[in-house]
Length: 253
Image 1 (cartoon, helix red, strand yellow):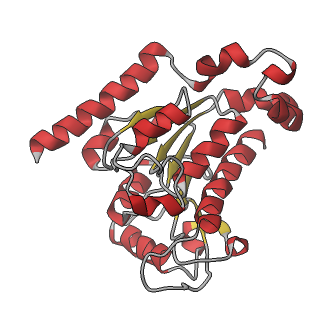
Image 2 (image 1 turned 90 degrees about the vertical axis):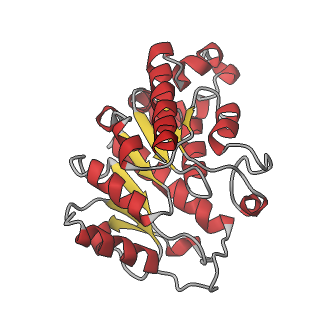
């Protein structure tokens, strides 16, 4: 187990170091296409955000979990023009991901590697969220931390690490499975979330660890529509898109 943890930490450190050393961020990866007119892939973003677009280009985000929620947060932030994005996920794609996850046509491949190809300039780290792996990231160097993982102990670890961040800089997704209506999605402080069993379990776990700091969560009080982990991409994707909107609105406001 120690050898496995050491390998995960080494992979995480190597990816982050490569990211810094090579300055291989989204801005550099797309600079050749950013002239004027139709050759500028951010032309529509510039029209909408005007001078605020420069603020967006200067920000860094790290996304933990790039499945049905995190993958769409990544897609939106990347297309909008966020300056630098790092993604962290330990999983490989399997056939059951294909109803909701970007890149899931590449069954059997590492999620972060596939998404690195689909989104040039994004840096992927194949690692589980643990105390050891979190320690290998310089979390304070990121402007935004997105928690789109579905493991409660790991979510608690991230919440602890991000407890000192200003409200809105750490954003967490709660339960997006078993639901049908994206209009039921809400955004609020974790301690004011309601109507979702997963969010309640997360609050209970935070209390046990004496973590009282409030942070922003995306949740839905819609009653579950099934007993198993059934999912609907209209909802899971909307969770991710809402997270991306929260990030961008925080930057420009």
